[in-house]
Image (cartoon, protein in one colour):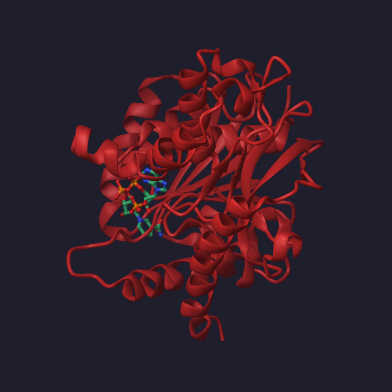
Length: 326
Ligand code: NDP
């Protein structure tokens, strides 16, 4: 039998975690033959609520669950973790300026990056879900100088999955037939879902849809504002779909995509004029526990414009937290 893998999850009492933890424990993350130990981090006032979630996890009697740790200390939560899914973040409250939100989160992710640096597995794979996800991942990465920078990633997968679903509906094809979608940039309404290369059973989806007005006036805003539309309809933010995307992101990173493209926020290597280190959504393939950027994608004028918008936003965020990283 395989020995257990330690999976750390922060924000364990939150909405997303309430979907995520059960699926991890069920084997959806690392496979049905891989025992896991959950290491759950919360802020002190939420620890009691985590205890309640863990009572429910216990009541599922998951065969793969080899242990659960509950703590408010990042150095306990991240100890020997091979996977760290950072969901907990400071939500924007009424009257809070964007700059305040950035710095409140920068403080959290600085501490968590330092703790990962100190106690996590040297190969720990980090996924940041908590917003602003790309910049939070950047801060954690910068605060963990002894860990490989490429192991810090942000979640673009929900945007990717949302785009796949919209495309499949528009083209009238099964979602599973779609390949080669790219979502570029920040996990925010500025991200750019790009289906210029997307195929369905080998044929161009762009040619099949053949409607550039739909792309610009319906598809891009629908995907970009999907989070807000769900809040409007449901009265609560998306949580199960965000948890599902987190599972997809980590599972594919660990177990591979068999040549398929997925979108991940990863530290830039300078491609497409994105300054090095900025955590930017790009298409990747995964194999052997590593991701590889899909290279050689040409940008047309419209795509360049869209890339610039999302990049400018990320540069602004990076500059906004620069002082805190000193
Ligand atoms: P959720 O579980 O709903 O969301 C957690 C984070 O994920 C938020 O930052 C949210 O961003 C973000 N997110 C990213 N993508 C999405 C998406 N597509 N849809 C929805 N959310 C998305 O938040 P809760 O408030 O229910 O729970 C957060 C928990 O985190 C709380 O229990 C809090 O105590 C905890 N926390 C823990 C910390 C720690 O472990 N040290 C630190 C700070 C908080 P957005 O705000 O933009 O919706």
